[in-house]
Structures are given as structure tokens and as C-alpha cells.
Image 1 (tube, rainbow, N blue to C red):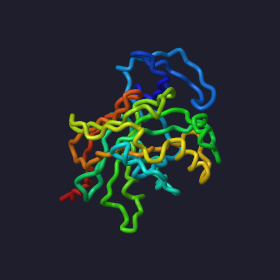
Image 2 (cartoon, rainbow, N blue to C red):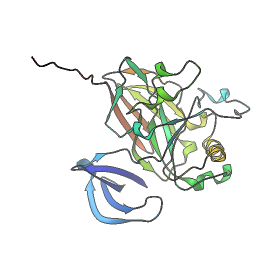
Image 3 (cartoon, rainbow, N blue to C red):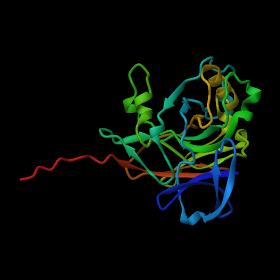
Image 4 (cartoon, one colour):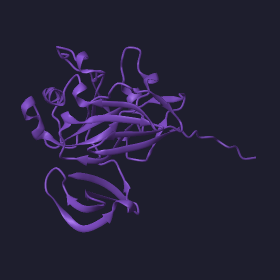
Length: 261
């Protein structure tokens, strides 16, 4: 099932994509919902980020370039970080490069959407707590990383977390590839088999630290190949089974004060 959030005439709806149409739904996507009977063509809607996250958690440096590089022992404490919900945008929206820098880094990722409250869960139970998956772009400005290793500011600017185009609820996450195509050139293309910390392990671990809630989004790491991009560049983050998340990059619009004479 592919779940979408979309806009028509400034009104945001939710629906299930079926072929070239979207059947509107109402209710709680994590609980009870029903079809309203309204059906729209995908051509007449503007897709939004498929979820307004409760919180966003990312994991750092989670891919190797080939299977032989996978470590025999996983890190005892993986590197996690938070991103603000205000950084979320949807497909086709612009990523704004902050003032003072010329480039930012793209990071195409598989994003997990938590479907029910999880605390101290076993790795074998993790799939029961996953609602679905979407595509994420963990845009980063490492120029703002703190010299002591703090990542928060460089990860937190508005527009730095594109999500979309849909949430796929039926996906075998261990058998997919994460791609990024910049200006028509493939920059990332890796199987999730190359993750250092597997999804089950990262979610189980996080649940021992904090209570995960429905609507939490977990960015599972970016494959090798992430690069810097600048204003005018276009990126397509793609997971075939979910879809293509396309965005363009632009410079921040400076505010100028004009004096009246």
C-alpha cells in the first residue's frame, strides 16, 4: 500500500495510490481510517511530504562500499542525531542553501516510519512496530559542524529533510537499493545489505534509550557517494519500490533594506 499526502487548491488530503489515481482516506493512519469515496488523478495533485513526523532521528556513517568491508563487531553505541521537524519538505520543493556557504551535501536514505509505541523491544519484534518506509534526503551543511564533533546545526536548517513521495507499507527493506541521481548522473547506488548497523538493530537499540512513538521517522544512513551540490543542481533520491523524491537546490533569498528618499 502506498500512502500519500497531497494538496489540491491549498487543502491537504491523505490517500492511497492505486494505479494512476488516489483514493482519499480519513482517520488515523496508525489506527482506524476509511475511504471517503473521493478519487483524484495523480496528475491533478501536488504531493507533500507523506508524513508530518513526530520526531526525526538519523544514524551517521552507516554504509560501507562493499560487503567485505562490513565490520565483524558492530559499534556498541551507534552515532545517532536528531533533526528538527521544521526541516521537512516534500517532493519538488526547493532545498535552500544557507547564507554564507555555496554548497551543501546530499544524502539519499531509506526512512523508516514507526507505527506504534516501542520501548525496550527485541530485534525480532521490530517489524511489528514499523508502519512503512519512505525516501529521505538528509541534507547536511558540514561547514556548520562544531569542532568538537557536534552535528546539530549542520543538520537542522529549514528544508534540510526532504521526504517522499509516499509511504510504502509493504516492503522487504533488506532487499532494496538506495540511489541518488544528480543532474542526470548516478552518484549513489547501494543495496541495504551494505548497512553497518541493520534496521532491526538500530530500532531495537533506540527503543532502549527512548520511547519511540507513532510518526517517528528514522533515517537509516546514506550510501557511499554523497557529494556537495550547489544552487541550480537537481537531485532524485530513489528507491524503486517506493518512488523518486526529486528536489532542486537554491540560494537563500537575501533581504535587502531599501531606503526611501
